[in-house]
Image 1 (cartoon, one colour):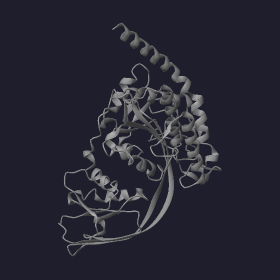
Image 2 (tube, one colour):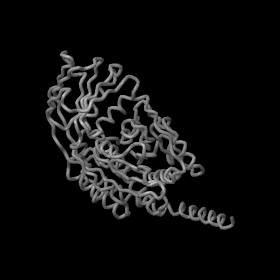
Image 3 (spheres, rainbow, N blue to C red):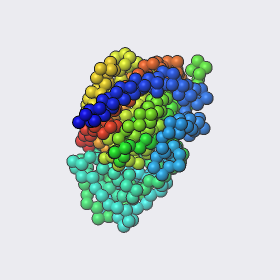
Image 4 (cartoon, rainbow, N blue to C red):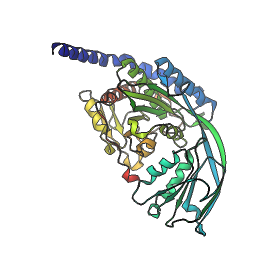
Length: 427
């Protein structure tokens, strides 16, 4: 009994001392060091498909290596490369039971330029029935690695066109999935689709800190490192540096990786990801997210634009989709007495919860939220050449990053598990 008491006291003292040491790891000076590199003019705005974004990826990978993170399973390095298929539709047509289908009732998700198929093609057959979750079910088939013909109930007529968004995130390894909205039971079905495709190579940067007792349960910390590149000059400046959007979030991911690696007590496996392609459609997070069984992801902290004060001032940030899980309540509990406050998203009409890199996993029920301070109704440098490092508050950024680290403690330890997102509203 006495030995257990002494052990408990030592653990408490160690935890207290390490909480003091957090300032040595996460501080304004180190935040500024990383920010300066990522938002420098020589990064040329980190636009996808440019040499500049490759330089940014190399810098982040070097930071992960220096920290001592492990590459993702099966990877030889920290880059998670993939080929994105960009498509331009030419024509789509079909027949069902001898009757012509309207093009609007057909969505073909494929990396191929031409698709011609019928009921005898060897494709798997499936259906999305009334009352099911349209987007969850559709994603299941597009992620299956198999060719599918999926019949969609006409009760989804309002949301069926939104399945076309899946075509924007097709990768070279994907198979063909054909969605057909119909009330008929097909005895015959033919589909023909033509599109122009252009492949492009992209890469996320991913590092892993394996857990101790819960290695197969994951907590993700993420931000996107791409931005808008070089555009039309404004007062002689043509570089969209993206210091806040989202070099700030990427800086946070690197700092959190350094902190948790030094702490070394995570029971769950921590995944640190810098995504590409957020500004052009969320391609990087989409590809990354589909590498996970969503049931194994316990939480996702996506960090987006934390370089400026929130509408409530310093020592505060907001959480998108706050009401959709109890994750925000868990974070608040862990921050009691610190003076830092997480608020619910005040910009709900902008649907930020499904507009950032947390969205793919959130749509599958994962408590995946974005943390931000950006005043979305009045952020003066958002998507402008003026989004440069001198507009950011390094001390406040460091405080936000420390607060994310401390607030996540009971989740990474396995003590707390946030509730899942109810996906019924996506039907």
